[in-house]
Image 1 (cartoon, rainbow, N blue to C red):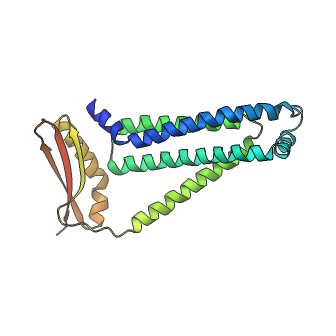
Image 2 (cartoon, one colour):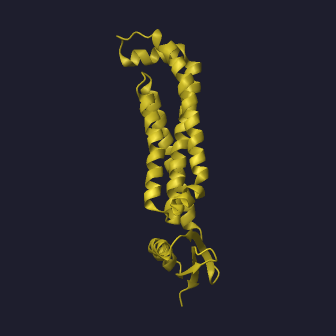
Length: 217
């Protein structure tokens, strides 16, 4: 239970960011709903979709651009937060169960709001913005990954690369260290380093994991 609490405490800023995005989505939805109800009132429901869309764009362009921009910003930030959260969890080899629950919550917020936008007659514009948002976030991911992989990292002998804890039991600490080593050993081996783990118990009878690097001789 304490490990779960530590997990959410560790990533609290990501959850805070998601809460702020939720507030942003709700606020945007409230104002957009008022605008949309007024705009749709004058639209000919029997006309083709393209005619309805052109009518709204033609007569409400200024207001529409504001809501399109806000929706685009929220979608992009939402996708970017999900990406960064996922990468951070993978790098630190956090508990899969907690990560999955969090990812589902993050994705549900995004999917629900995108679906809500798609139920309007201006859904083609929102769909286009969503595609652009995904493209931008993907480009950022590719560039960041490339720069990270190209970076020539150097480590001092016996330098600490990871400290994690506290764990309630030695078994939990062993499990974490095993998962971490399984995930990162090949990466450090290619760079000429071995990973060595140390598991220690503190005065509070809690366990801590320290991972250090040593040169391959």
